[in-house]
Length: 127
Image 1 (cartoon, rainbow, N blue to C red):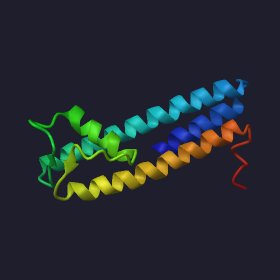
Image 2 (image 1 turned 45 degrees about the vertical axis):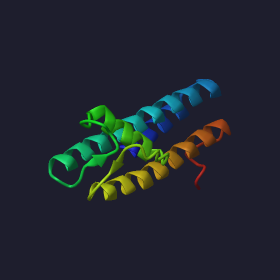
Image 3 (image 1 turned 180 degrees about the vertical axis):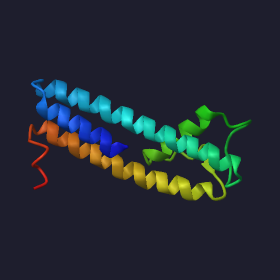
């Protein structure tokens, strides 16, 4: 999913006649939306994992809502890891994979934004 968003942004921004600042703003908005969507997918995965008995979450005084799960996913994806909510059981593995994946995808997004700030042709930058 992230590759699709990055590719579409890349193609659109290279073909556009927009200013460098506007290109950067569009790229920021695009990658932010992609990351939020991806954390939502992980949150759904955590809910499914809970429902099939892979584990649960501790740290709340009451039932875990979807927004709590989404919050955990966002904090975990960004590698912030506050620890106020934490997974148990096999959900810990999914949380670790999410953190690694989030780090890698945020790094890819940062590389695109850096190239846009440098005003370089992002298509030929890796060659």
